[in-house]
Image (cartoon, rainbow, N blue to C red; front, side):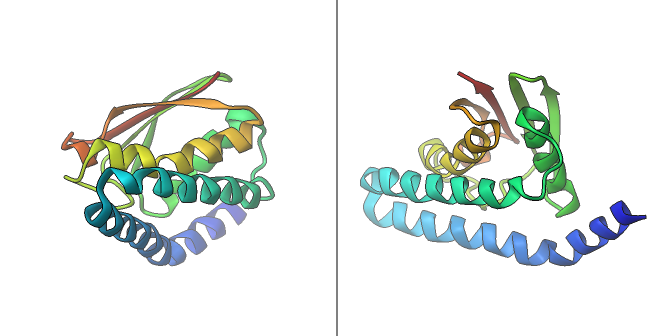
Amino acid sequence: MSKWIGKKIAKRFAPMMKHMYLTMGAFSKAFYEKYGKDALPIIAEVMGESGVEGAKIAQGMLKGKGMNAVRELFGMMEMMDIPMEIIDSTDEMIHIKGAVCPMGLEGTSKELCEAMMTSDKKMVSTIVGQEVETKILKSKAAGDECCEVIFSKK
């Protein structure tokens, strides 16, 4: 019963969360369009800090530890109406696929995607308690049909 209530609450907050992601994406796109490659290190730094702080908040709500907690967190995205599939997951890595870019970066550039994904990289690193490597296999920002990313422990 409580899981159903959690899903219902998540659905109610989904529009707000989507709006927040799209706003971050719109701000970063505008900054990138104005300043080009010079903006990327700043975007990455800000997004990295956001990922660390978001992970600290999430850790208090997650039941699992390590990659199990990361799986749990990415699994919640579906409850927020952000379509995401976990392709594979082990204690060492997680491979995810998304049908849409939650940040609305479609058709921009892979380098902007990489800067923005610093948030997820730092979030995953903080949750697992060690540095992770991020491989962006496909990116809606780069014009691919989906986003596909692997996070793996170093």
